[in-house]
Length: 107
Length: 126
Image (cartoon, rainbow over all chains, first blue to last red; front, side):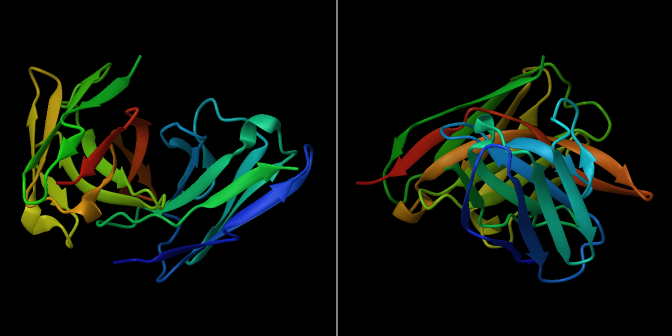
């Protein structure tokens, strides 16, 4: 199985800050990487697929980058509604695996 | 509007079999590239993919759980059923079903879960 490792496990930011979450795969996954946002008490929501393509309706302050084994989710100008846990997921092949999550809090 | 909803027992005893139903609307599981998957989230919050059934009835299972899982679809009812045998307290989790969308990237079709059900907590306890 491909292991996905996210860092940090949690972070705290002020409204308007730029934050970055990284995700590392245990082997190359090209750019077959998705990002999800899970708000408290809700189901995960697809934010970005294929490493950098924004899902329809997702605010443009979210950007994804990276390739091979190292990927980054950046939020430019954090908003209060961005409080959530963010997960990466490799889509290189089954079994599809997720990172352990990064919890974003607002200061 | 695409919606999915999980249903089934919220409490099962150890060694029992869990049967969960995903009822969906707004898309067809006959459409090329579409699938429905099951993902669970343990109280420690990790997400674990379990199984996926494709529009053409092809199926994929988590290798670590393959011997305990089965997945079927009823296209006419817009339902997918997951069965997990020999339940253990370690299987206590919130179970989600989600639509699989096939996305073509550089000629390769990858999997993203683009719509999720609300999830249901299943507790395994005697």
